Length: 530
Image (cartoon, helix red, strand yellow):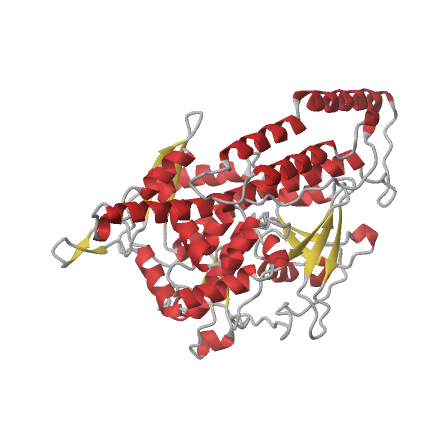
């Protein structure tokens, strides 16, 4: 039986114009109840008792937010705009804003509940895919197929049923098989709406080269705490999975990355409105250097008054450097050694050699990994965890082609938080910005994962917040602007420096009264799970 999580009415009274505050949530809950009551006792035969209730459930959900409800909300907004235009503006101070609208809070609850239902449905779909694969393989074996022929065409049938490409069908089946058969905690989190299918794929793909026993350990560490798992964005989740996988099987991890480097390439695919996507699959240190170089160009141009956006400057700089780059100057290392089809080394007089760049790379690794050969994974900021051997190679094997600067960072032995520093200025000094960048690595807002652009006080300076690492965070520009909107509030949590305390983070309260907890990624040196 595909059990849809029970959905209840959100708290609150009546909304504007006498509308029930949880009208949408009521309908969602009713649809879930009717679905669970009529979904049958299981899959006694393929799709038995499921298709009909699924269609009914979707129909009731569609009716929950019908055109009439949306039209009423639009009329109320238009009326509010007319009243606001006729009334002198009132600037409310922080802390004196009216409470959250109960109808709006109920709709947010309904959106979250619908997301849980959608994710639970995708988990049930994963179970169905594994069941179909088993049934189809049994049929193929009974028909006399053997070896590699068994299983052929299964992913393609799943793709057709999902209205997707054959490649995506095979990917969905691989993820479903690994999660359903070997990762029970991940499957439970998926079935309860904590994960969607893409995030489940991140976990499954990151453990592809591990043994079933090692995969079970990653499953317990990542999905054993659903509340913490729920707050990880896609990049942070991938980083956590990669770090655990590397700690358990460093040799296989390094071998996998070496194989990936041999598959570097450049591709072009069409986009809408006369645009294209130019993609380059590069070794990580080259990719990070390219991005940082373009980011530096954009930052300099914007500081000089260029009115183009950061992205526009980066795109224009990329085209300029690739299309107007001349031959390498005389005496430059322009010869490239390649391997011929016969296996012999051949020198080509082409300007394709990749040398060390002057762009700084930020690498965080433990002293024992750098100097003593320990296997603690390093973190290349802006990318994520990398194997310790690759980190050592980047630092120690430059052969004089690049300068290497080492800076010591100290972490708390229990919370793994970076130790604090203090400042009395309102603006974060450069050293503290670097500290926050190494600490947060990505935008601190839950699930954002965008690059850090601004450094901001968690508790605002105007409200008495201090200019310290404990009260600082890295944010993207969009989240920094949203944080200043009416009704938003952020408070620092954890990281008090005492042993046994929780890791540092931020609690965000939105205008509807909902709260979200953001946690920082663990730094190198964290012990792997038992």
